[in-house]
Image (cartoon, rainbow, N blue to C red; front, side, top):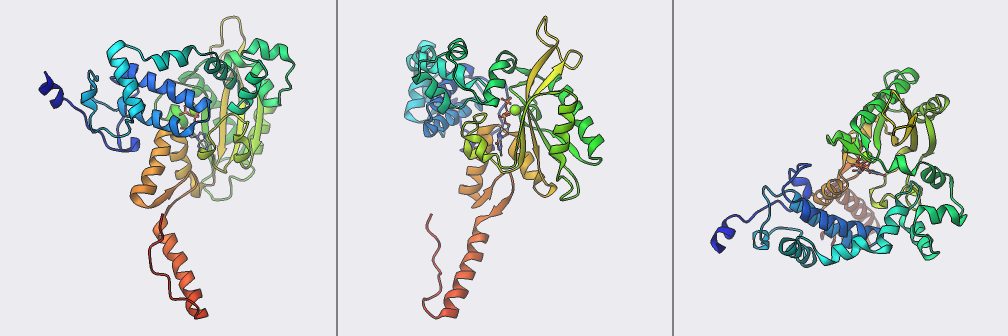
Length: 365
Ligand code: DGT
Ligand code: MG
């Protein structure tokens, strides 16, 4: 029996971006357990641990068959001691006590509910928990001061925590398309995020807007947002030039993923006919992100906004570690070229000053 296990052990490439991964895979109970621990680590701002669990979950999602024994995992990348222990427990008992304890812990559930409010990040949620607020009702009764985003998030909590369907995404695409082409002929709208990856549901709808002539995208966001607003299609919007500022207590994005494009966080009001709102309702609220990019950066923005988050992170890690290149949502450049240029300049400066010998060694990491 041991021999058989040996022959069906798996191999996968080291980086998630090198692996083909299907939405439906063979190891959901293992990946769900690891994903829950990743989520918990994120809610407790332990990013190192969160990424480790996310990577482990991604490896399991990429396997071509169901795992039946840990021995099959020997030699696989990204499976640390902790992840292996979780996997072993789930294989043996069908569950892992750490996962179960976390899943039922008051803190985890409170953090999940509170950060599930648009505009509430983990720092705010943690502060509220320390003030004895664990759920929406306590928040509503507490008279806590909410900013505009959080108030909108609380007002539309139910809708915003319902999955957005492909049909909703298509309706919104039509609306945005209509606005853009009537206001800025020639400008382009591209659906990104999970829907571009072919997912059937999502937590929001993401768009990139650009114009084929560099510079002509300027002013696009303001016009589109004003038009949408004048049509009564927006329940909330906040446009920012530099989304870095937004990350702290904004809609809770990890700051490492942030770019500097002009961006609009919006909540659309989608009417009956455009969507199927909950029974008895005339409309539903849907989160929409609009991002404007100059055409010269569009390719990088499209790559960066298609996701998933882990895929993007791994692609950047792979570019940096394996190719000595630096990738962002704005550009891709060769780090050695940049360093060489820098060296040439330093050398020229040194030679002309006759003070030091030219720099020749490689820069340490
Ligand atoms: P979803 O909406 O939950 O179904 O899943 P996704 O994959 O659409 O995730 P979402 O909407 O949070 O973000 C779409 C992708 O865009 C995500 O995979 C990574 C990227 N992304 C999200 N926020 C930012 C950001 O602030 N800056 C940059 N450069 N990329 C971002
Ligand atoms: Mg999305």
